[in-house]
Image 1 (cartoon, protein in one colour):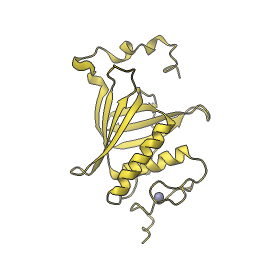
Image 2: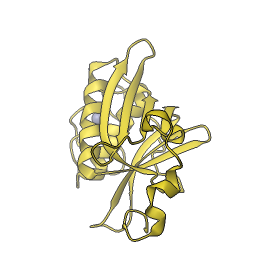
Image 3: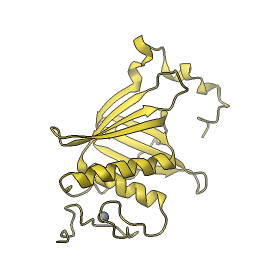
Amino acid sequence: MARGSGQCCDDDPAVHRGPPREGGRRVTDAFDLSADRLCVGTVGPVGSRLFLIQCRQAETLLTLKIEKQQVSAMGDLLARVVKDQERPGHLPDDQALEEPAEPVWVVGTIGVSFDESEDRVVLVIEELVPEGEVGAIARVSITREQAAAFTIQATRLIESGRPPCPLCGSPLDPSGHECPRTNGRRPPAV
Ligand SMILES: [Zn+2]
């Protein structure tokens, strides 16, 4: 992948981003999405895998590059929120990355909170930029089900073998996991 190598003239930020507006924030780089899908995945060969998170709302597809450790941290934060709230319903089944899986920017910081009135988990994702520069920002609201699915998917992606589920603690089987901490197909354990 040429982008990120620093050797391509297209890497000049001005080419990709257009002129800054007032305050340095670029209009096209502020996203406010109510996600239809949120997923995490990798591209590239084992050993030099590139981690991506991807969010879709209707026609908008936002793909961001993220470090493995950040995926892990984001999974932990989301697991904590999910466990604090009402049990999620059936989790989304399809968590595959969509094409084109081309990141538009690199994740710097991630904040997670819960909006009680909307019953949505809110992610605030800021771009990694040199100190003093203003980067892009994405505010992404997701359901508790999407948050639960993300945290399970992140664990599967990062840990090998049959790691414990971040929500219920039982092993994540490669063939699938009907989490008793959600209202999935398996009846919840009493
Ligand atoms: Zn589970």
